[in-house]
Image (tube, rainbow, N blue to C red; front, side, top):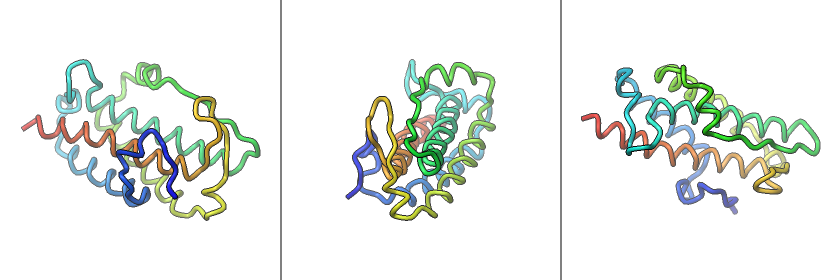
Length: 162
């Protein structure tokens, strides 16, 4: 049975590895012809723009992938929380194309890594200060659902650019 994460609804029962690959392919396709101005567009007033969403996705890939690697190699690993808004604030100089490339590289690296994990690896547990006891499989599902959640926002920006 698949673990329940904050993004379970976005994943909607899909295989997380397939979803991760499909999201990366879709984001690469929709951002391929974007101009610097396109990366500064938002899907709604007061919400992150595309550059910030892509930066957040890249940062999340770094965090989620590190959590899995640490859980598999450090007995009793306890993950750290992070404030996504503070992380974005400190990377305001990252341009949209670089943010997209960083996300795509990190996501594809994590996907390739996740594909190699055994059932024993997936059941490896660790602790998180907000969520309690989690497993590597939870992170894998969280990652896929999180990407799908933000893909919808990027697709809205893409549709609106005409």
